[in-house]
Image 1 (cartoon, rainbow, N blue to C red):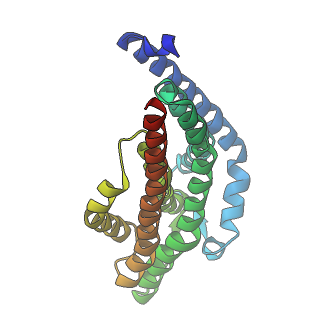
Image 2 (cartoon, rainbow, N blue to C red):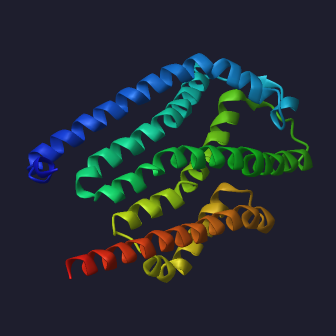
Length: 250
């Protein structure tokens, strides 16, 4: 501990560089695994709504390769996420007390769980709603729906990835509260701005109608309020620990 506390700025930067290299290596391994499982995943997604009624096309020799790379990247991100969280925890570990180290380590598996929940919500709710909306517009205009597979999945990932990252909000807030960089009072003061930002994001990734924006905005706002609640739990525990420590010194 004393050795870590006495590390110079150069040593800290060197350690950070090593951890970043490990994260990149794990991402590459995850992408290789993603390449292996890309074909069965694509086949599965093509067999379930709303993709099961689509006639698939490619408009460029690169479309098939682009598909594989997109799935490899997403798979790599999923695999790398818990490892990245662990590396962040390990880097910050010397600055945390023993009880804080144990409490913050539990954030790692929950980060993966929330990311997967975000993927599920993004696909089964937001993406389907957006696709059905755009498809209905095409039918109203009597257009023939000819979809390029690369364009279809790019549209899908542009919705899924931002929502999955937004689902990490409770973990990020708890972690920053644990580091005493955030507290529930500050989050409550920022509530109106946070609501506005979340509504803007929901409007950008959903069809241009009020119902869709509300359906997506409500879970995001609930996530924010849940984050405030978790921050309050962590903050109250910190106050009790500080009080106990002061009494022990007294």
